[in-house]
Length: 590
Image 1 (cartoon, rainbow, N blue to C red):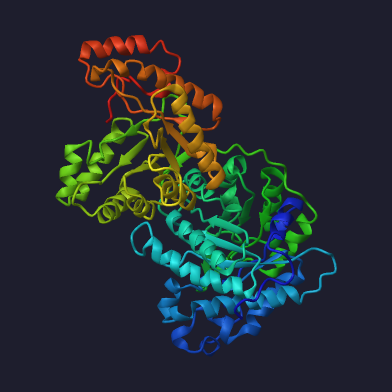
Image 2: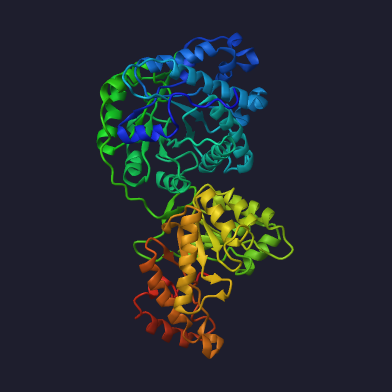
């Protein structure tokens, strides 16, 4: 089966179909297979009963017929029977070594069903390679990011070789797990030399949040930054409960939006799980999503049958989604909430006490192995008004990777704001990114050692692209810290163009720190550096639209006595760009 490619349509045609009108997915796999009345013998033994993915090998006729039952009612996309066909969930049945085989077989069955289906209407049909969340929670440390990504990569390789047209990474309850799935899928595509679109879907509980408490804004901020082709919701609830999170996605998602709900909320009747939303009711709800919210991809999850999808096809074809004019929010996020980079009532405040170089309390807690003490430093900054918290564990003689793994993992769940990962070592920043499901900021990129492969800029921008992080860019080049306005702007343009043109980042992913020396140095040659920094801030915002600026509190006034600092603040506040520069603000968080 290795090397088999999709035969009915090029991988890009799924995106083309989205541009033409509503795309309709099939209905449930698991609940429909359960309704057939399969016996332990169908799975190869009682110990394997319930592993629906194994049916790709033991009862391929049953799986293929399920696909065909949905194709007959007119759906555009069938999902492979591979929701749990990767090592983590398969290990519960002792089948982890068969992940590739099971995934490839599942893709081949769906491919055969699609290729053998004669519709006669000229519409292409697609095979979506399904990858579910598994049974381990990456954010809680039950599985490592790298281990999860490795497992997804093997399954994704099987799906590609079996002939899928796209990946659907679905029912994701953990942002870190969703990112690992996307990374695994992309790794498999690189190895196979074949690109297909990625559709990622989170699941929102009745609370209106994901399982850990993630709001939809945080999910969109984190996942949109890793640039999937479609973002949406599936499972957990019926369509009624999806309205508000879908409205947020409709307003702000930069890519098409999908909605694949259950057939209502389940209930148990005579020991059986029952979904009571009728086919016509499902079609009505999905029609409202399309007509009012501009949702472009619909389908059915748990409890939805071919009859449900027949009603959806009848109601929605040939409808086109309401045109959307999304307004993406430039933001970072924790696993709980989104924090816009542009604050309505303040500038963005970065707390810097969770830093071995800036806080004795944090350093001593880290050296003592007191992770709770480290967390308390982070929390204290939130209490003082910080919107994001800088995290630096660099300390001579310490294992920075191990320290960052422990502390960032704790910050992921116990410090409720986004994190700035601050280190001189890219590998330390990466291990932090592997613990944090939200969207972080990397501190920092510069051109001190140039821009070639292996340089710091190369390492940091590569990490930002891979994990969807924002980047603080320091105006330093091979000659040192840029001091004059023209020098600063020369470095800023270099960094910007490098990030955008070579690494595929956006201007809005970049935060420029123009740097300055304090007046208190007493060096006459540095007296105008603060003015050069303010002018550079103005020009960065003019010449690099979408980019933002940051500067350390008191960078100009550090070392002056309190009376002199008050005068500087009073005079400085007259400068039109001072507030956004954060040069002489009264509150000190560093």
